[in-house]
Figure 1 (cartoon, rainbow, N blue to C red):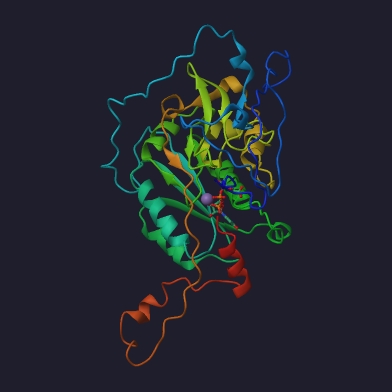
Figure 2 (cartoon, rainbow, N blue to C red):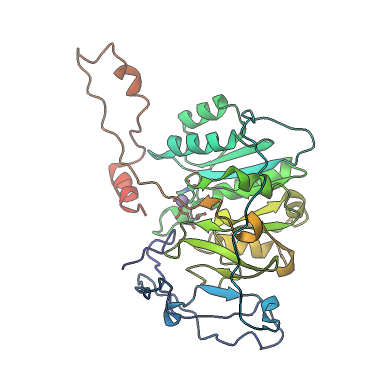
Length: 368
Ligand code: UGA
Ligand code: MN
């Protein structure tokens, strides 16, 4: 089976090579029991086969787990599998009106990087309609584009949500490279906006193409420092998640550890605004694959401070869905039969693409 574990670092496929038991910081050497090594194989994937029981053989369980120091406590007896949490009573927000603001409820600042392409309006429509079910949301849509995409600006005005539109471009030097740090410049613009305008509540980096369960938003708005939770459809493992034991984050399960201190997905954490404001130097690096890790590290969070959400990370409430890339549409054919029909209007609603043909072709090829 050929795995497509590269969710973002195109051309930087990783092999899953070894079990690693990595210590969080300095101190005792007890944790380095099985540290065999970590390896990244650029443009190379290692097929991972499953045994008959469906689980990964130990020799293949490589580089997918990292443990924090706190999990080195004495292990007594055989491990007992956890049972799923049955949720008795979920706060039902389905009767929430779009853009509803309830006094006393902490605001959620949702920072969504986006960029012009055929799928842009559909993605943002889907996400907007998720957010219509969540009260006290400020949706910061930050577009990576040379000029604002009018259809997006119009949609944000009419959707009924509290929105902030920002526009910024990826620095020219990164636009030229093959593996671009996607969404970084625009997330940073979102952060600046939060620093200048927000006082309390929680912010979350939410890509435009993911799928979100609204229950996640209800939990994350109570984040005191940094909260973390599982993200589905990440790498061939199908999930990237903190490992939680007895209510504490003790490590991470992710198909690409790559020496990251926090091997998490961008959609896998939320941060309190006050926590951010107390850390004026916190920033996201333009470093492909290390954006999340770099950002969370720059917050200087201590392991014990991580707040596991989604019932101690036993629910998957956000998925790293990826939409098939579409080519720009051909222009609508116009003649006496079509002029004076709805096609006069539709022709302006379809995505005809921006930039050169070659650029659009490249973008379609890069689809992951
Ligand atoms: C994965 C992660 O989920 C992203 O958070 C991370 O930024 C990205 O990899 C990366 O490191 O490059 P993936 O699905 O592979 O995401 O990437 P995209 O969905 O194509 O892009 C991530 C976000 O950036 C999206 O919201 C997208 O609209 C935006 N983006 C993408 C831009 O703003 N500019 C671009 O040129 C491309
Ligand atoms: Mn994506």
